[in-house]
Length: 89
Image (cartoon, rainbow, N blue to C red; front, side, top):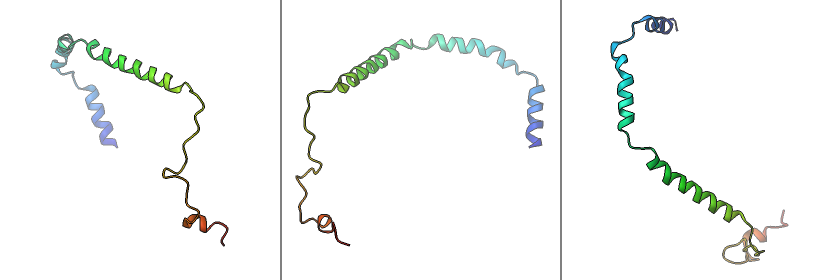
């Protein structure tokens, strides 16, 4: 652990590299050359608004429709093993 502390102390007291003086200009030039972020933000915001509207409309309750049967293939058979074991111990 002392090695890390020593290395960090040396880095803190080391002189700043001269290339860092030019980094601000390079970053600003790269930002200026980048395409406008609105080109991506507009379709994303439209998709978010559409999803919000679908969620709101989907959340409005409709008419009272009876729920579908729990068994997808009809009512369970009275001879199914699970029903034959009910009450047996």
